[in-house]
Length: 283
Figure 1 (cartoon, rainbow, N blue to C red):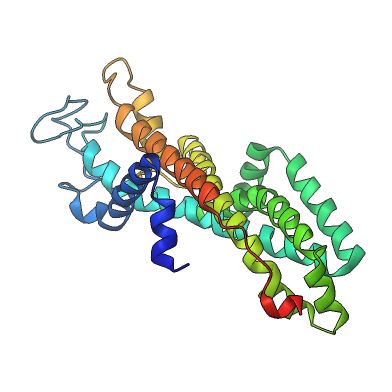
Figure 2 (figure 1 turned 90 degrees about the vertical axis):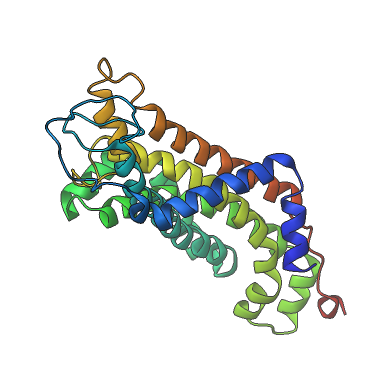
């Protein structure tokens, strides 16, 4: 099946098409947000504090007179990039050990399982705070902490998928004829594991965005006045009585993006092909 055909199958449900549209808008915000901002997101105007929505300020202004719409646009790249960075770290630390634990013997299997069990047991917030306190309060440090803690999600699904393939007759036959572990993983295992990893990536990306927003809400990972979606929520909640509509825009963006990622994960799961063994592997 071609890539175009697979994409069409994934986007066949209405929810998947809506999710793709939302993610396209979010991607455009990440790419063009700062350029589309009508004002400097850090510029303060003491004559326009806590103003309501208007033609000049579509989402009003905050307690320092900064344009909220401009800050929302300017904060989109950092919010989304931070979540993607955390997912990338989780992929690297979860998928690779998950594959190796199945094919490199009992010692590697035992060590990787114990490591992942330890990561699952770590208190998330305490670990994130400890990482930023030790390495500095920056995006890289905070997202590394997030990625480390979401790695077990990738590890478990990768290991489960790889185990089902490792016990199949054609992989055992390839092992008996002298095929290397690298060749077996590349030729047989990875194409079975990839659909599961893709579904997990979409689902975990939504969770990572929520985690990133939570950390920036608490001031972890990003130093104010750098705008982020979570940081905008924290700022607006301090003046909720004066601006009750304030948290709506960043909250709706976060909720819509997370829903779209979960809907896409469901569509990928439903459309995931059931791989068949290669013909030469069964001879």
